[in-house]
Amino acid sequence: MAEQVAVSHDVTKLVERIKDIKIAMMTTVEPSGELHSRPMYTHEPEEDGTLWFFTEKDSAKIDEVKQERHVNLGYSKPDQNLYVSISGTATIVNDRQKIKDLWSEGLRAWFPKGSDDPNISLLRVDINRGEYWDQPSNVLVRAFGYVKAVTTGERYQPTGDEHAKVNP
Image 1 (cartoon, rainbow, N blue to C red):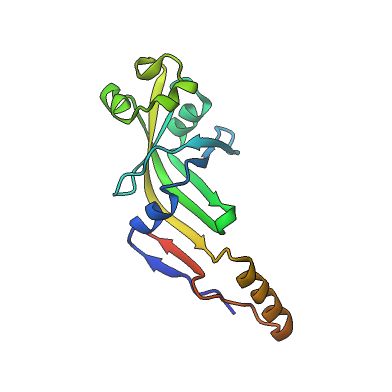
Image 2: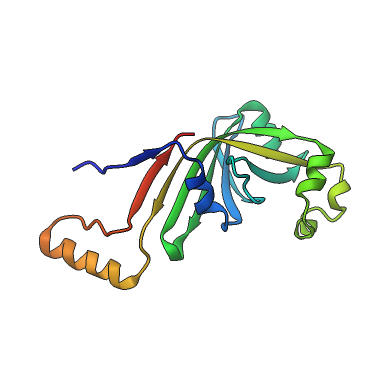
């Protein structure tokens, strides 16, 4: 039986799920066509779903985004059985005021010269679509699901199990 997946146009469902997950796996496309993923710190998501990332102007990801602007972002909270995948369009932003507006002192670990570092760029990611899996993380609920599946031969669908696609 095919899984029923809800479809929403409300990007806030994605933003709500990722707002406390600071690290995303960002996947870009190398010039050879190979996929390239790396962890990236996500700045506080904007209400409209715009996502911001600090990076170096001379990094491989900047060259990759210049060639192919489509990126994927993977977020997870395994301890809560929460997984989010976002496909978006990346834009390189070199606006010095925007860099200052988004700057936080924690970024100094990567950019010791601070927000005035001339090698800082921003990657702005506008969400094209996303998908999330948000499942109960209670061990007893999962154990019950296992027992039910084994005894009935049917997949257990717990209350609160949510899988949805978001197409803003």
